Picture 1: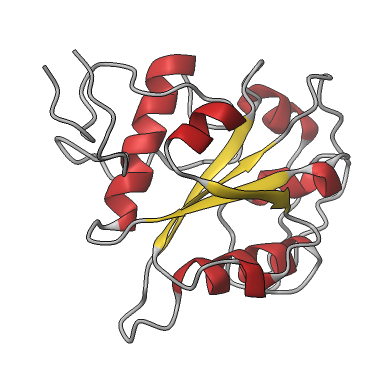
Picture 2 (picture 1 turned 180 degrees about the horizontal axis):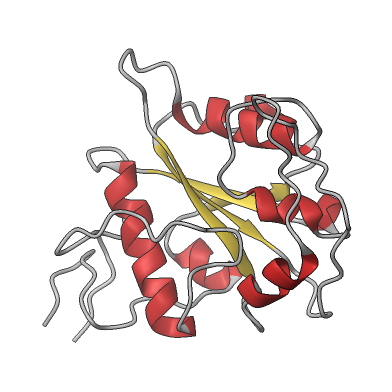
Length: 192
């Protein structure tokens, strides 16, 4: 039996809005028009979801800002190869509190939104979503992770997603940390 809240080789969640809600994710609001004041300032994890079941259509140009002069645009065949059919979750991210405790979900999600809007902001991860034609329809949900390292929780979620789909989420180009027993942040989920 896997301890509650621990990843093992067992699938512990359902990768849908309902499944994320069961794990106490909140928000589920459009990322493009996110009001940062509605997001907790705590450290935590977040996900970007696409509710449309239609095949993706990719733009030739990425709308994200050019950080340090680097163009975020990726060739369409690369995006097509990264696409995970039937997955609702497109990206899993983390937000640490930072050294002084001033970062957190509110600041990180605001950076992500501004980066997608063309500003040269330090949020290179997850940039693939900004090449989707329906990027303005994408939702974001978040979960504070008090007492847990958000990177461990993020890595556990990515590992569970990989177990379920056989690939990382579409916009996660890194697999996350590979701890021997990462957590998902759900203290109530027990698996056998």
